[in-house]
Image (cartoon, rainbow, N blue to C red; front, side):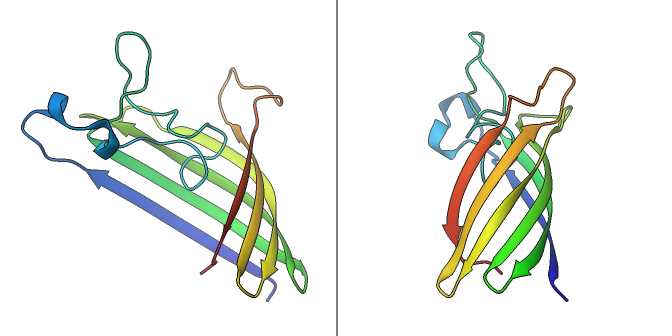
Length: 137
């Protein structure tokens, strides 16, 4: 009665003849709020020879979030996200997990989230903090 489970999936693909001429603004990236929390904005995807993320032809991102209302206008959330941007084969999914708080105002929700990358080399200090505002469905 006081909980809500959100499951989200985002899939994208670009079919172009010469991807090298495809603008970076139209390529797919993953990471950050609304994508894979625990990673910075556009941190995930194919990289060039210098290690700079240049975006991919395709993207797969999924999220599972549970919100539990603790007061009239307040909820706590836990989440796990997974995804990546890639060119030909999705060979690695990056996973992030965390928790947050929601202030449920009549005009939208204010979201405060802490997310951590889930990997062997990530530590507790490797978190990302996100502030978001908008309607909740």
